[in-house]
Image (cartoon, rainbow, N blue to C red; front, side):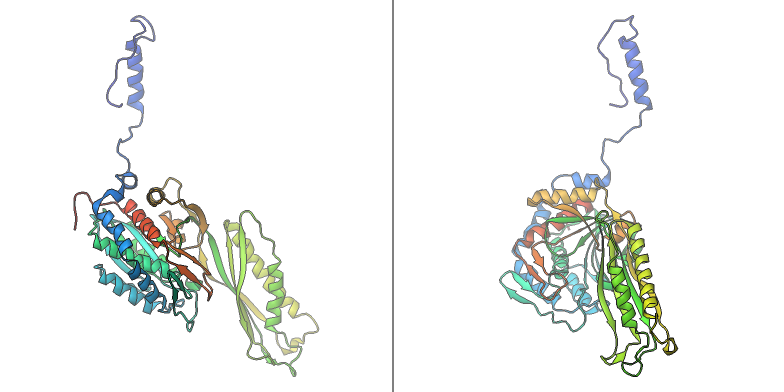
Length: 446
């Protein structure tokens, strides 16, 4: 212990190793050693304190999920049936805002379209965010009617992210029902811009707004309890466009064709070698161009998604795409093309970039998640993925992305499905994780 020197075993009064010399030597060491507080840090104390589930109010919140399964499932159906294509999340945001306000947490919508509600804690200088993205990958006009068969629901977007936003609203209701006052303020957020070309714009705005106070972010994305995303997968989304004069398929034969050039370039690109380690991928996700089968098109475009565990590989792939498109244009312009009928212009533009990052293995947030796993009898693996958690992780803010329980499949397809069986485990896991890092105000109920 520091501040006291205890007697040591006597070796004899006249020996160099005698008690007097030994005590002096030990005292000298203790005086120069750095003093460590016996109390753990605030964040670690929150995660390692008395088991949250033994708290009466927390138990009431956990039991709320068991008693309200039908309401949660109905809410998921209602929200999924409100279309939320990229950049068109307003109607769904309005519904989520209304549900949060009905839960006793007045909500507002910011300039980006994020829905934000606050459960104020004992301190407003430190905050924990619980978020779920509002948008889907499906374009306007997609049939999002939910078909139910027992606990199974089927509809585009039902799991990604109908599950997440339903869980967000359910957790808000459980917290209010149990009159829980956290130590740190909890932000409950339905954010936009996670899918497609949204470029995580909702989470970027949130982190920019609350960065000075934000201590941790928990993202609810999809279903399951078998994983926790602790590593952010970096990605870039690009669009290659080739333009020409356009013309008639018969009278203007020989004119350079943007679609031909795009195909030539794309064939080169898809033959690009990528390493297995670090894992690196690419995907040609969208292609468009032309006005009719008997017209030489005046424009052709392709959208490409590239991802890697290594930023240098991302740069290499982006360069490969640019080189391939340039080569495709060059090949298309070779004889027998009639250059008097025009030339081709091309460009490759960056549509969006998701930064990488990684949560420390000794993070208090991960400790809170593991404690929640232990309570529900769950084992989960850590993984790398591209989610809203990319933004806080890239800035050194503790963040994870987890499923909200149940099981699902067919994400990003018209055959998407979700089974609500056992979803309560995911809801409890999320609630305990958030409270594990936000903490409870001692000796006070609301």
